[in-house]
Length: 455
Image 1: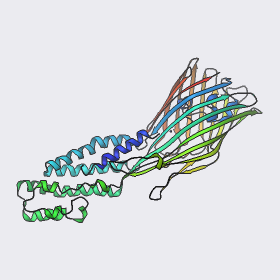
Image 2 (image 1 turned 120 degrees about the vertical axis):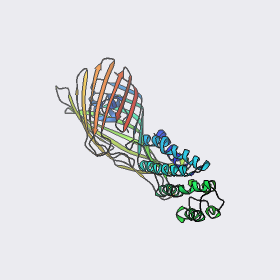
Image 3 (image 1 turned 60 degrees about the vertical axis):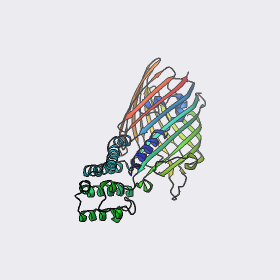
Image 4 (image 1 turned 90 degrees about the vertical axis):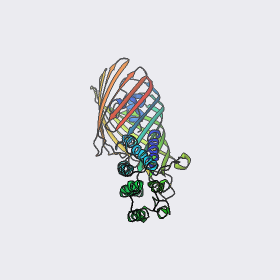
């Protein structure tokens, strides 16, 4: 195993976390297709998930709705990590592996100098990955059912979502190690051809031995190897002196997140033309924390990395249909009670807090028999529940054209909070009971599919 094998382990583990970590709440195909709107425009089946007051004022006069199920996922890569990993593995990493083998098998001044240059590129690539998070979200609504009644409307649902962020932390000691390898190879490169040709003088050989025996390079060179070099030593002897520092790696992959299950009952009624709603809900929370030094045998145990909680929370909402007009406005407070859920504590005494804070949003809708236009605005700046996740405060626009059995939808939203995640566009279709949607931005992509019925 060559001394730089850990770089492949780092990249592969980071890709594994990115590919397999599982969510944001309210994965609803119609909402996603319409820019994430829903405070005033959610369908009856999704009303308890977005704004419980909408149970009392459904757009289409429906009295019953069922979603069974809805499933979606969204990935956010604000630092372009996946492409950086791919470029690193296909570029500096592969080149350093090939040139390392060239140097070991046929040590020359050229192969030593080439490897020295490669390691500088590898070092820069790993430093560029360090601290850059990938945020992955997945959601599932196994069941949502709603009944509209002029006296009291009811919505019952189960909802599960996960939000996990992962990042690679490049240790300063590992950066120093690669820099030292590069420096050492660069300094001894001229000696290699002289050794091969037999033109190395005793003074030059003594200088080479002194360089290899320098305390700066003690981690890189086999103990006693430098002092054993003598007048008959060859470049192959020098190449064999290099250590494998894999066991000294300090860089790590870190992931933190939460999987949250909800069971809720939405209740809504109208008074003086204003609809009020509340959704009391039970939360089942599993926090997740993984922080491990990268080695070739890096493994993961959910049992040792997670912690379980139960909690009670609620959403509050209101909606008002302007008499004699197609216009409706709404406001909702999600997760009325602030919650903090800690992760497990690692061997160094570190842990992470997962925070769920109240979120306040307002919305407006214009609804006609065959068309809907809607807009939502987050009134609070919403920090992602996991560390390193992006804060957001969205202004969203959406529209729907109802062609009887076919619904065409499109939307746009922009993040008013500072950060790299700004604009997203979305689109989707409904065909009978099937709804699908997708969203795309410069650093994010997502999709939702669901099956639902209403009448």
